[in-house]
Image 1 (cartoon, one colour):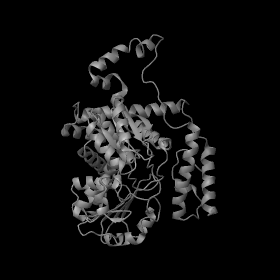
Image 2 (cartoon, rainbow, N blue to C red):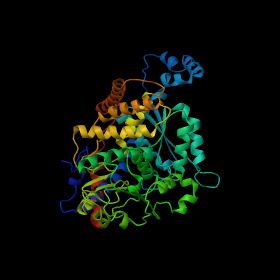
Image 3 (cartoon, rainbow, N blue to C red):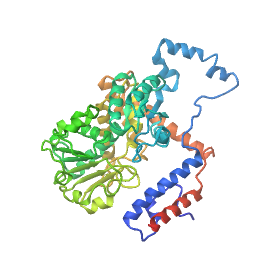
Length: 486
């Protein structure tokens, strides 16, 4: 019997019994990276384009293409909105990135982001019943610097082929301008998953964690470690949803954000960070040691690595503290280390630890909800509605300190979330099409079940093969050697 099953269940149990918790945590990361490269090579990527209409005879080519399709072109010409009905546009998302900040690996070159962008497309289809296309672009100008205007122009030019745009892995400060301009100047939703997506799911996790420790969002002290697009947007959504900015302190690589940070004020590109400086940290605290005293919540999205967040910082936190260490692919502190230091609830961005706070439970349902009502944008209120939808869904089925948010294998969470987002879009006045909650739920559920059934059918009928067991065993052998050689 193979030491590794094809479902990759209980990853930690496949390693030698004498390994420490730290070795197991590092081993899982190495194993998944090694296997990912081999599996992508075996399958030639992970997504494909397939027909959704039949070819019942030769003349059907003349229906799907020329001359019949001429009628489709002229109908759309006379009313562009019919493109949502007569083409796949109404269920199609562009995943756009210049690959300048891919996970924790930084600038990977435009093509280097394809693995992540195809991954977003894979999850959108399987979890949300949404088609998506990865578009990795070169945003460098003549001076060799990444130019946000090139991304803006690209999205504006291609928006007419899509129902929504998912921005991904664009470095700051360019990501701020790209999102803010496109949200206002495009007539379809433009969503930055690293910012709004992470903020939405993090807010959901915080809401349920606070329920378990019997604390209120308006009363807790929150420390944010990292001041990129994710944390600045998380702070904005938490404040909008009732958090007290005067009880918040955010840190970047130069210290605390506050009204005396003239370096941030002087650089107009970082206007989102300056907003945080003006709203939070009224006492101008500059060190993590001071900030973490009696803190209720730590939200870290910064440098990957298990020693980025110190155990002494966690020990200084208040009673029943909450630690979100969400850097990918390696959290800033491993869950076992945070628990050793006194944390009551710990979340990371990874699915092989408890409490995965990851965009994967957010964007498939959120984008599906926006697409169903043909929204012109995704408002902050829609993102907050999604956060509460996720939190409420988990609370109804039961939450514990190791299970605060839904997981990707809870299929019904996505149509529920999509319907809640669709209703908020109608309420916010950004929906072109109106429907009831039940209509939205049933539509999303049908599309998601279709996508999952299609994937299962392709696998069951041999069009998608199982990965070779030997590939998994090779990955395990390589991982054990890497850990034990050190």
